[in-house]
Length: 256
Image (cartoon, rainbow, N blue to C red; front, side, top):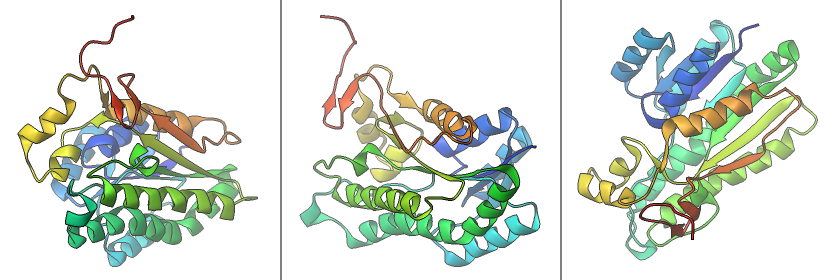
């Protein structure tokens, strides 16, 4: 039986790469994002079904829930959408940026769970299990200067995932967290830094082989395609050049 996944953030980056890979592996995929034009192009190219929605809007999430229920339900929620705004010190942070990060990373997760869990339970009854997978960040694990708002938002999302897993204990529902370190995508850092291309490029300067979106998508697909009794509670994935959040090698990797 073909399984159906809802992938958020599917218009770019890790979300788009995940939607493409799951579709190539035989999943039915619903790609969710705000930018309808990019979703339409993805749909035309891959067969991913486009569904435009703003996940900071409760009405949009309710509409997504109703549409999914009417069109066949859902076997897996893959929540990639989120993001960072700004790199200010805590004392200089913009409360509007912090509020948006909490909405985009934490409240969107809670609203999606509340809205889609009934459908996921029905899928688990039919297929033996269903999945809720969240892409958080190593920023949820270790704070760093200039990251306070994003650290707080991603840590909040990660704690939501841990609590949810315990609350669903005894049900055939897998709750999975993938926490990437440095990933070079076309938009994440650029958006965080207000469109400053030079500053975004400098972050990756000299780093040999940072992760790319396809690397994270591969881990996500592995977690979803693993046998139903196997749960990857938390996978931290970094490039070899990044041994820890604060320890990043610049220059060629070589033995000593």
